[in-house]
Image (tube, rainbow, N blue to C red; front, side):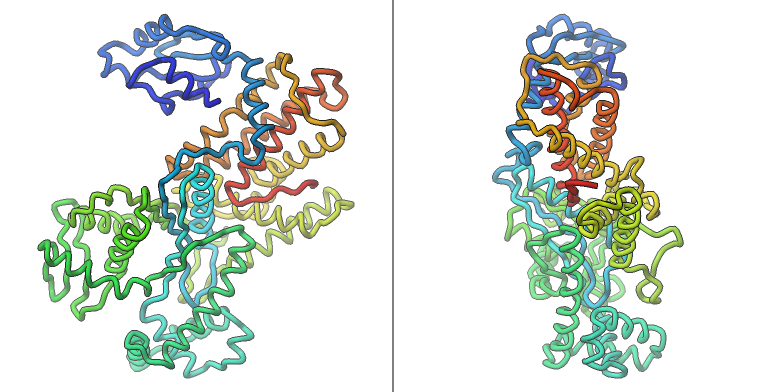
Length: 555
């Protein structure tokens, strides 16, 4: 049962929805609360008076045992026995489907994320877009949406002319095949270090050859692309990341002209110093550059074409762009231009901005060759996880597999736990701590719950007549909040809500684990506590799965 939805319906007001029902700061006040402050303007009364009047009208029942009005808040206490029965029976019945719904049935959500550059290795700066986008993909899937994951490849631009020029000068096919994407990147870095004007001109000519369909130039480009995808797909597989489309910038080259023609027909294009722009001054933005003075297209041109193509192809409900906050202006311009073109669906385009990730020694630059590769970060996390696990449990079976799961979880969770817009300084020691707000802590809690259930040897059955103690009721209430948290994460495009929920639930369960006997309890108490432990394991596993994180059986 969604208790927020239940309470909102019983309040029977068009001004109150489930989203208005919150958790009170102090659980002694109640299990749920309705702040009445925003209703003051609607009802033309004080929040205190509104809360008192709603309290008088509300009829308690088997679900809500009591209602109180305190300082403009309407607080609700849930029948603990009924809550336990409802929540635990639902979780044990639904299993891995707990938290899922059909809210998005018939609606398509596009998530553009990762968007790697061809011929460049994955660096740690790509971590956030990859794992935030992947988590949103999984969250919307869980809510019943048809989700299309798009890796908008950076596969267009003069850098490919530079690569061909560098390869022609210094490259060797056998060495590049052996060295893979890193050998390609070394050529790119070497070009930028040594290029003079003559070499830059040569690079521009090679890029023009790619555009004009030159066979050799395009074969080299496709080779660089295949080396890139072979490399990145190994990382995606480890990170449990999936895409439905790899249509990148180059895919939209032949789809730009209709958009340009439409801009012209609607008198939106203006000439400025030989370039073609859309003037956005009255909207507080600099002009959106559509075509350079030499007729060349830009990111904006291709993004406009991509948006139109995606709407025509997928008829999306929402189209999300998981791109760093440095591109805020770019997306505001794109969305406004589409709005000026009369595209009513421009309002359904969402820039999911995020902060930057760096290691404790600072930021990276691919062009200068000073960069921390994501594969190295992953490998180091897995190695450190193996060391920590060996120290804590030397006899553990399958330590390599467990270390892989724990290390990868630490990388993903480290980028997802904080609000996405915050800049992150990645710390190996912090993300691999068994204590604190980490995936390792949550995974260890899962392993602990699994161990308890396994040792019991009992068939897990819910004891319906049991009256939960206070510490048990706190865990149950947290368990019951999971479906609402998943919905909130989708509505706010914020996977950190799921990550934080997992930590909160793990903390509440561990308090219960310390305070209450489980295996040595007897009768109905033992049966109930085993059911509660199983429900925690299921819910934590489901929460981590939405983030792309696995759970070892033992740790």
